[in-house]
Image (cartoon, rainbow, N blue to C red; front, side, top):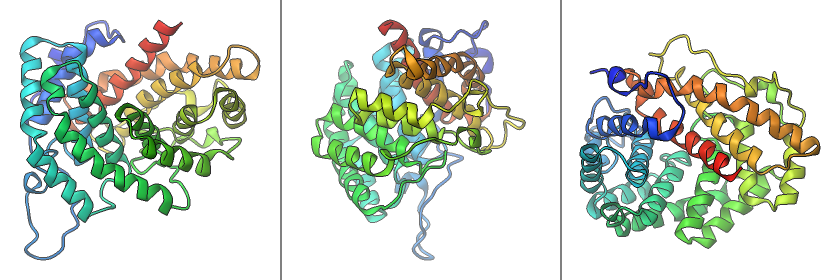
Amino acid sequence: MSSHSELLLPTETPTDRRSWADGFAAVVVANLSRRFPYATQHETQGSDDRALPIELHPAFATSYDWHSCVHMHWLAARLLSFGVDEAVGARLEALLAENLTAANLEVEAAYLVAHPHFERPYGWAWALRLAAEVATSPVSAVRALAPATAAFAGTVAELVAAWTVSVPEPVRHGVHSNSAFALALIVESARTLGLADLEAACAGAARRWFAGDRGWPADWERSGQDFLSPGLAEADLMRLVLPAEEYVSWCVGFLGATAPESPIFRPVTVLDARDGHQVHLYGLDLFRAGAATRIAGALPDDGDAGELARRLRASVPPLLGAGLAASVSDEYYSTHWLATFAWVAMESIEGSARAS
């Protein structure tokens, strides 16, 4: 596999989106243009069930696995909205048009219905976020794909609604099946797409699962292959579903016992960047940088809430810096997904700075 490092890594490692947009766009093109290696999670039904990934998933058969392919398509659409190099942008548009056809997405929707636990809930959340991005894109070539992605999103929404009422307890660990992270993405996407019933179902699940939580054991974070902080994911979700005053009280009760030296605020150490599970920790840093920014922005500046907000904000620069370089490395186990998390973190940070 060819290296992208010399082309993409900015000399002084700035942390603004403009400095990274073209590099991330090149990463997305590289991901969406390759079919192997691909980690299929297909449940084989018999000796004749030996389809290639592209046959099972005509829209999402790149970027190493299904969910990463979905959020790389989201990043492609997001980068086109932001603005990238013209030639790379044209390639992104072509890839989106080639992959996100109505026929391809009908096959993907049918697969999800036939395998209702496949990619639950992480892949579902990114699928809805992709549909929301396409529906609201200022780029006409992207928005033209909205009818196909909306139909696909309708299937995903039905699966999500059934999930929220059929699962008694949330999943709290820091990898793909984390319930809070998925619900946060779905709530935001449902609002964008005007899916009020879906938003209400997710908000209700969030309250059932998390509203009574207090005293998150932050010193127990993190596990060796987390790419999400369970505590910050939960606080980020509740920011979306609780009224402002109620959220402040809840958040102080949930995260207020943390200290500046708590592991939840400290960057990770990755010893082997070729270990596909260990490099999750780069994504953990990026997720925490974005989530800490969003949570702090929902808190007042005084009292216990203000102290917590300052701890959260102080953690952001080292966390962001620790994860950025890995997102454009020549290691495919990192670059098939990390750019998405980096972009989301930088969006949150820049949005917070503008608000201030």
